[in-house]
Image 1 (cartoon, rainbow, N blue to C red):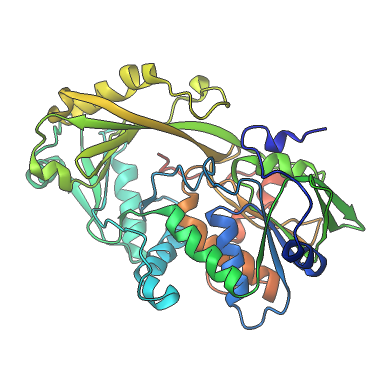
Image 2 (cartoon, rainbow, N blue to C red; image 1 turned 135 degrees about the vertical axis):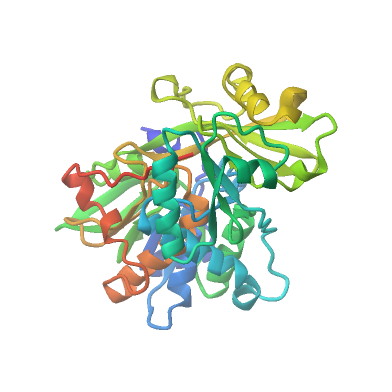
Amino acid sequence: MRCALCANAPYASGGPLNEAETAAVDRAGVVIVGGGIVGSAVAYFLASDPSFRGSIAIVERDPSYRDCSTARSAGGLRQQFSTPENIALSRFALETIRGLKARFGADADVAFREQGYLMLASDHGAALLAENVALQCSMGADIALLDAAELAARFPWLAAEGVAGGGFGQSGEGWFDPLGLATLFRKTAVAAGAAVVYDEVTGIDVVGGRVAAVSLAGGGRIACRSLVNAAGAWAGELAALAGVRLPVEPRKRFVYVVDCREPPEALRQAPLTVDPGGVWFRPEGRVFLCGKSPAENEEPAVGDLDHIDHAFFEQEVWPALAARVPAFESLKVVSAWAGYYDYNTLDQNAVIGAHPEIANLFLATGFSGHGAQQAAAAGRAVAELIVHGAFRTIDVGRLGYARIVDHAPLRERNII
């Protein structure tokens, strides 16, 4: 029977493994399911650790990466979160990007646009905004708390009516190419000996409280010393193959590309701006990207990623854009795409760490829209657990599986 894990993004042909893949399967120690940015980061940090002596196999179902959430991400990078762990995870992404050439060579580039984030708040959200900015600054983030008058002076394209203030990332925030970073991680890991197997995981064998092997659609099996679930939006269904309940599911999100008639030049240099109602936009060359997460009771059906809900733009996105930026009163949609959040229904925060009962099962998923920017740190954290048995740099213990068992959500209050 075909696993629902694979229903919306087919794997490669699933035929017999070639000679190199067979060798990798025979000697694989750590198996990582998911070859997007998170799985690739785990592989990179394992391969880069001098103490790691094992072998690595990445199992990825789509060799084109076309439907991978990494390829369809808007690539935001911010420190403006309310949870200390999220701030720390994203600050490591900034460190990684700024040190890209030292890690990967002089030609390494992920097109980082350091234009900042502007998180706007109404009177109702002003106190929380100030609390969040204070926490972010205490952790080293360069965030300015601006009142309505300061916002109007600094961003003349902005209509500040109904806005009490905003948090502006003066440096260290912006957007980048997630697929480019994933490719750097994966290629470097492969150069160090990791193998990529394009196939479908159809079964997970758990013996004596440990994962013993995974089964592939092509008929192969990979013995596991450790298994890493980095399957993104499908991580919940993958976990179920091992008898594990993981509240992570796909949530469809739309990104609209709009052209604006004669926008002010300053608007082309705007930060990624988030309205108090949740609509966001950012410049991208001569066009602008924009979108909004729907209300819980208005989630679109998970299915064909080529199907775009243009009515959602007309009814939910454009009115808020035009009210906040007068130049957007005249615009047209020139393109759009959809992708999946790996949405953690418990608290919209990542699940990172070891499973408490299946000792060699590790989780790196549930990022709920901020996986691209937190992949580097999550990959390093999981690699540290596998190699050293503990987190050595960022303690993300509160993001572990125990809170799912206890149904004790760790809420992130700065969700886009």
